[in-house]
Length: 182
Image (cartoon, rainbow, N blue to C red; front, top):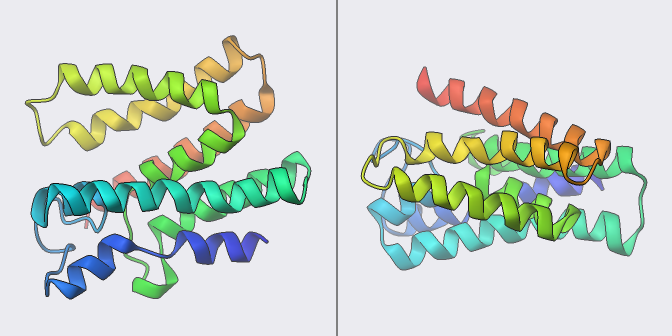
């Protein structure tokens, strides 16, 4: 299931749309093949669609593992991280993927819908304050996961959600550093 989660995470609607439009998202806009770049470079509709697909591909493997198969926490954590890593380093697209924010959000929505939704609203408010600083938008959205971790720890007192949030935050920051220096 962990390998299947990685393979599902590796699917990229953004990359497929860019190829159909004969564009290389790695060399235009934010130089990142993710929904945000599709939104800015192809169209708002396809950017939103790509973002929704990214959320769904994060939700699907975690939903299957948690709800259908009822796996324990360790396995759910591996499935979650595999889906996000699949989005960031997709095997189908030469390991050049997006930042993983929407896919991470999808995984967290299955793990604790209300908590993830609460943190999404907080991140939306922060993003609204910085809405004119378009270069900062992707970086501001990185605040979503530390907010999730703190909220999971202090409001839910759930160490499992806190650990998953911690692992996701680490790999998102690794990807962010990779994108900054490539």
